[in-house]
Length: 181
Image 1: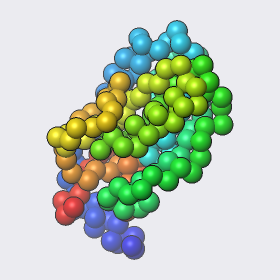
Image 2: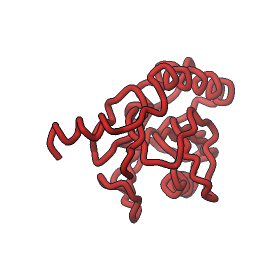
Image 3: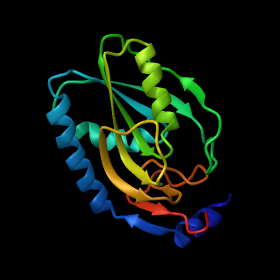
């Protein structure tokens, strides 16, 4: 895809959450997470690569001690449809006996987040909670619900704020939906 194609894709997209709405959701999430986990000294794990923007904006809002690490598992690999789970990096921190907060960009079908929860429990986590920037209203019976949700998005392919469209536009401060997918 060329730069021109990428810009044309954004120009055709529909903005579904403004930067102001995203920032307000982050403030609300930080307050909710703080009320629930401030005394737990949690290990916070960002799911790469989509959660990098979400984590980078949420972490400074969390006003309690925590440890931070990441994990990398994917089902998309630059496509708009999820495929087979690919574990790339497991957390380097010891999760055994810990309260863990998993940060992810979107709860779509729930397969990835459920697999992460199961893997962390298998690794000995005492408690696994999750926060997602977005939860897709797709009507599916998801195998997991996020404990903390920033915004609900429609059942369309969304991008921006860490979420990508064909590997592009994770850097946008607002959330957009493709018109042709």
